[in-house]
Image (spheres, rainbow, N blue to C red):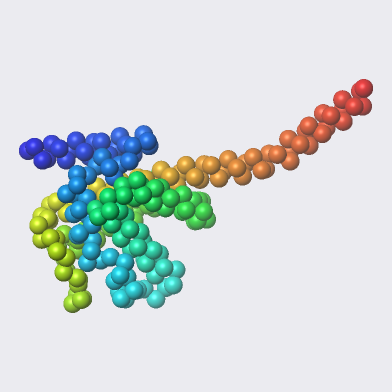
Length: 210
């Protein structure tokens, strides 16, 4: 009961910190053992193996898969090994800002259709069962991870669900902030010529009257 209450309290805190912004969610959402769990349970799927995995025969999709695998590798390493929680937070935020330059997302991403959430939910449903051992890869070259067996299926599932929830929230929030900033800059560039024309017209009218 105590653990469940503590977990519920942390989940409630996640929602608070995601919306408020100034607090690092990776720092307040996980205890040290949970951060280590993220790092160690991901090791069989880290970036070293991405080149060995049979990628889809689509260069852009394969590139995205490799980059996202590398992103997860770096994040779990910073959170659970080097304990660079600020770096992990900055990386998540930078990922959102970088995606604001994608034309498709710039035009189609909204509250009703959050593509980051779609991807996050897919990973929760499809990838976590491999992380917690409920499913096994057909490959025989899976790494053996030291201490991985000390984490229960329930713990790995809970930790990764919270991780993906936080990651999606941070990417979405920073994406929206950057998109608004870019939209404002574009609007200002459009308005400036009109403003100059109006000022010139007023100046010419004043000179004519003088």
